[in-house]
Length: 429
Ligand code: SDX
Image 1: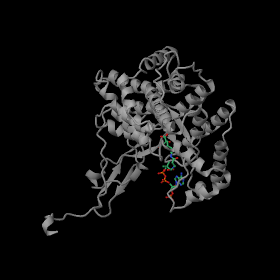
Image 2: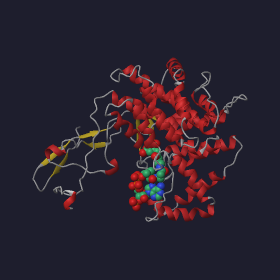
Image 3: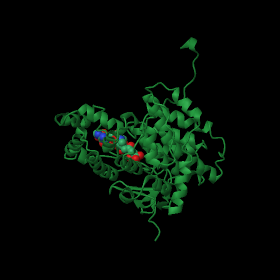
Image 4: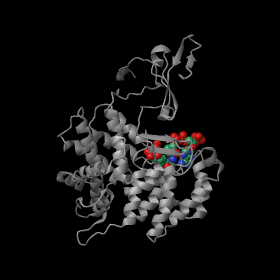
């Protein structure tokens, strides 16, 4: 049965138009508005693209009302419980879970692309020691295209996949190098005998003077966080990667743009901002004051780690991370008063009419920082963790877009400036 048509009529001109309706896999109805300017002479106005689909994609599905998140159809809860980050990366990149042999081959491919050109370590050493690691990441990743001239024919699907694998493999190496520069430690090169997440922990925290033993609790928790942060359909940073990609820019430039977009505190920078906020709140007795500030229209303060453009229900990732935070603290035998404070803040907020009416729930960033902190990852590196994981989503979405004819992204505007006026020479002004 075809869709009932959506018919719009312009009373002023008497013109009318049947708008085609397309439906996604889950039946979500979407109006195709492309013909509006040429038929009725109208554009649409949607700041922040709150009601606008920018593309079709088969990678990630979110149902904000039901709190559903699936990667290539697999519920995030099942992947979190039974998979690992590299397998999820394969799934997001290719669309299918790998066989054992395919996973081994993928693991080999990623492992043997983890090294970076030594000149990049020189580049990193040029930053001031207290440079924010996200500033370093954006600069260094953007410069990768200066090092990889080979196999950069983006018309060639093999070259595209190689660029994607290179970025997945090198992000942890670059991230750890940025952290070690800040600490004044010598470079730690990737160890091929370790898996993706263990290798990253070794590059981050090993010191030449003694062996570094991977803590399995830390490796498991970080691998889970990488899975949960891997992709999230057309969020701000992924949309940025797609927009930059639509111009034909090289994939390293696209991901560097994504890193910059992710850094904002309204997006991936929120995990760092949550810990800062919890420190500011300090004690449960101050929670009410901050809740009032978050509700005050005249106060720019927002409850960091709360709210979401799509989820008007509990972010399914936040539920998983909340439980994992508890487990990690228990298994590491550490307590963190910020965990208790976060739980109390959540309890009070979710009983408050303002948050309930606006459907503001904890999002992926609310509890993740508690775990990063317990693993010894400094706050300034929290968004870098997000970027390492989200690189898989960025390159998967970039590959999907590169594989289909895509017009350059070029939104219009509602012009609100002055009408035509005549230039007047400065002598007569
Ligand atoms: C991520 O898009 C993604 O998928 C992102 C992400 C991913 O995986 O890629 O999920 C990762 O970015 C998670 C979000 C992390 N950011 C934060 O935690 C920062 C705090 N949150 C807010 O800045 C806000 O909730 C956003 C930016 C996340 C979403 O903003 P929206 O959807 O544009 O909502 P809005 O700004 O229009 O707010 C709607 C109302 C407003 O009040 P009114 O104008 O209607 O009266 O809710 C209020 C807002 O003032 N509001 C909040 C609030 N978030 C929204 N009030 C207090 N505290 C908050 N956190």
